[in-house]
Image (cartoon, rainbow, N blue to C red):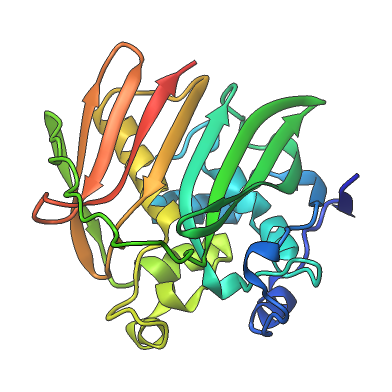
Length: 291
C-alpha cells in the first residue's frame, strides 16, 4: 500500500518545500531507480478566492460561474511539490522535465465548490530518454470524481545505444485553418508564479534562467496550456462540459515572445498547436475531445 500524507483544509507550505528542492539527491544509480509509492490528500480544497481571480487574469480566462478546467492543477500543486521533495523520492526536482499533461473534466466545477484532492506517483517507465513517471491527480466533489489529471515527467538519463542514432527528419508540420496571435510579455512567468506557487527560476527572470542554460526566461508549460484553452473558449465557440484535453510540451516559449495558436474543429473535438512566431515549429500541441 502507498504511504499517504493527509492534509485537512490547508495544503503544505511551499517555502520549506522549495528549500528542500535545492538539496542534492544522493545515490542515483541508473536503471536501479524505483520510485516509491507516495500519495497525498487535501480533504477540503476551496475553489474560490482572490487567487482564482488573479489566475483568470494571468491566463486570460473570463470570470464565470465555473472554474477554469486547469485551476485544480494549481490547487494540487503544493501536494505535487510535497511528494517530489520527500526524502524517499530519489530524483532531483530541478532535473525534471514536464513532457505531457492530460486533464479529464467529467463536468464543469462550480466556483465555490469544495474539492477533495488526491495525488499519487505512478506509471514509471524507462525510455530511451530516461525515467518517465506520472503525477496522477483526482478531484472529487461529494464523493464523486469530477476531474482527473496525469502530468508525465521525465528525468533525463539516456541509455547508451549501440551503433549510430538515426537522423530521420520529422514529418512536415501540418497547419490548421484557424490562427490567432498569442502575446507573452516578459512578466508572464512572474505573474503566473504568483498565483500558481511554481517559482522555478527558469520562469522568473532572464538572469536566473541563464544559470540553468536558457538565454531568457521561459513561459510555464501549464500557463501556455491554460492560455491556449482560454483563447479557444473565446474564439472557437467551445464551452467546456465533459471533456478531455491532452497536451504535449515541445519547444520552450521564451519571454518576452509571441506565438501563433493554430487549431481546427471537428465532430469529436479540436486539434490545436501553439507555434513559434514563424509558424514553423511547435511550442506545444494537443487535442480537445468531447466526452
